[in-house]
Length: 91
Image (cartoon, rainbow, N blue to C red; front, side, top):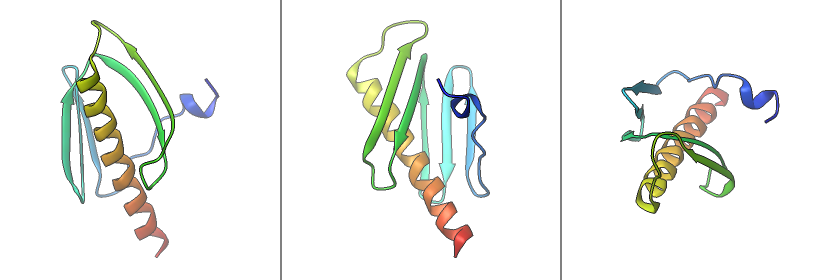
């Protein structure tokens, strides 16, 4: 992993991310997504939803395709909210 990959991700105004008891939720201008996970997943995604990189590891128990799809949906919602916030900040 690169040094930049170890840096914290800043959460912009209007976006709320929470981790609680193995769960993750992201709330932004387009709504809220939440999911209980025992998976470590890194996603690099373009604003239009194109995937650049996906890495996932089961932490406690194996995960299935449905959980993977839900994690990718959660990541996409977060990326879209971040891109919207960045566009707004540059306007």
